[in-house]
Length: 381
Image 1 (cartoon, rainbow, N blue to C red):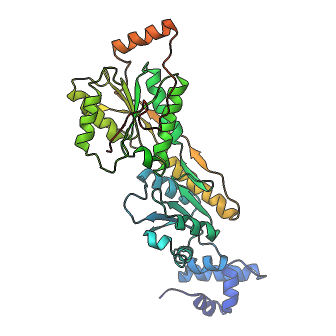
Image 2 (cartoon, helix red, strand yellow):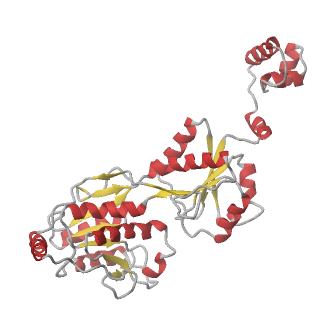
Image 3 (cartoon, rainbow, N blue to C red):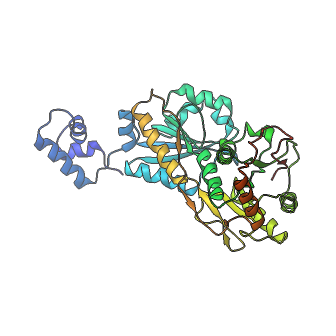
């Protein structure tokens, strides 16, 4: 049986309230009385009930990480979790994980129980896609310290700066001399883009910014607005066809590595070489991305950094629960140079030199959000 304060009281001949005061370093007890209680507690192997002590103080020393039980609605890389755990550990705080279905997070009678049942002082919410409006409104109404991870909103959120990510990826190709650079994200069509995860809009926006600053026309390869899903085989064939066109792109920025890998295999099928004929840059959080033995150049997302920043923001909110924090975008960690970027082919370089001598620049970017514009709007991957 565990040792209690009553056991210490009986051993020392003191009252239980006196033992309680001595263990909590409260009251006006003498130094000798405090010493007797602590020595006896150590001899008996007494361990304080941390939960009870925390409940009395109104602080638990624990943060809850709330995830969706629905597949695809929470995105938590290992590096992000490590950043969260390490930062909490430095503050001698604990982490509890709550994986909850939508119906629980939209139930007004349940959400407050997260604070009580999980004994936490605040919540990190990693719930990124298809978030029920009722859930957001309910959590806002709790007036509890909350930080949203990997989600953009008006306040209390920490997320990777995907505009900077898209811009940095594009600038890598521009610095190599490319002008015909396309952006590939077949995961979402134009009509769905406004409701998609913010990163799909922001990486594209970063690409457009970089192209516009260079006086070049963006070319965005996104699926069309039909509800018919595109198979990987269909996407692959679409890329093979694209690479056979006159004036094809000499370089690609892709939303994620799967698109870069597919373009690389499509180039090989066309008899083109990566990077001599086609250059590739993608976005990833892994240490290395390869295709057919080639290391793909990529911008590394700041997965660990935004986990650390999320904890720091939540601790600030715990100190001032009524004060909302402005959104915080975490800059990309680094660019990983691989083997998939080279100067453009000779014909493109000749055209570029001719344009430079004549002073001609490519036309300004057209409306990229309108179907039928210069931007290609193909099907879904």
